[in-house]
Length: 81
Image 1 (cartoon, rainbow, N blue to C red):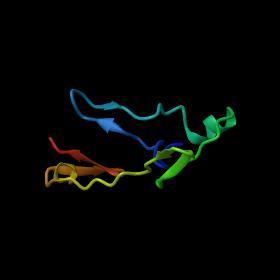
Image 2 (cartoon, helix red, strand yellow; image 1 turned 60 degrees about the vertical axis):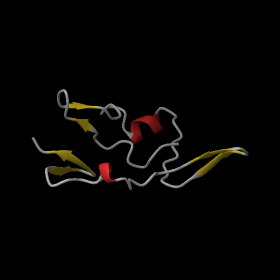
Image 3 (cartoon, rainbow, N blue to C red; image 1 turned 180 degrees about the vertical axis):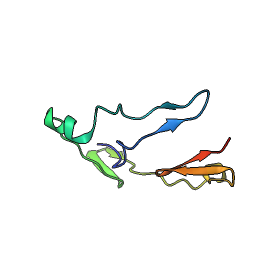
Image 4 (cartoon, rainbow, N blue to C red; image 1 turned 90 degrees about the vertical axis):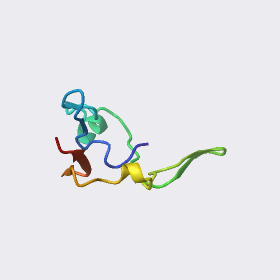
């Protein structure tokens, strides 16, 4: 089980620009061809009688809001330098 956007590009800028997401060779079709059964969801999901995955958690705190010195990169905002 994973977020539907697990395969999008994820980058960090400090201390240097680098990828922190799923390796580029491990895309959905390649994993499924290898036998993986993927369940991609944003919503809560009951995994067992007393175990629930929360699903996507909205960014609602002030420090998670993009600022004027941010730039959009795909679905994310990067701080402009």
